[in-house]
Image (cartoon, rainbow, N blue to C red; front, top):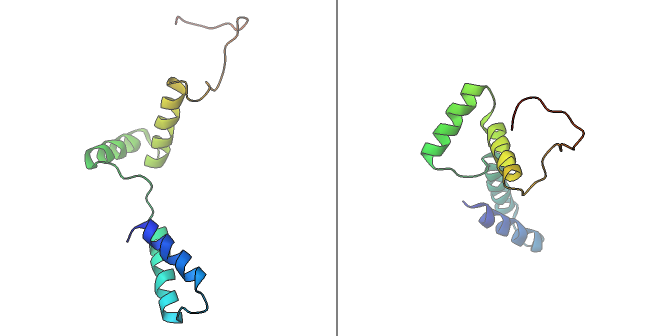
Length: 97
């Protein structure tokens, strides 16, 4: 059952709390708990999910942390987020750019 359906059922039950039977309320709450327990975040294509899982295992981080890092790096690289550090004219750097 979709999360939006569960949310609608919960809202409806809250609106008619005096009229809803205890067994019906228990069913709705159990469904909501099941949906919340099984939330996985975003759905990925199987080949993408496998690649991310393999890379995460290879570098020793969780898949969730890897996805956060990839999204953060992409946002910074495409100027949607500011760079985490800034170089000024007085800062010395080693190497070449």
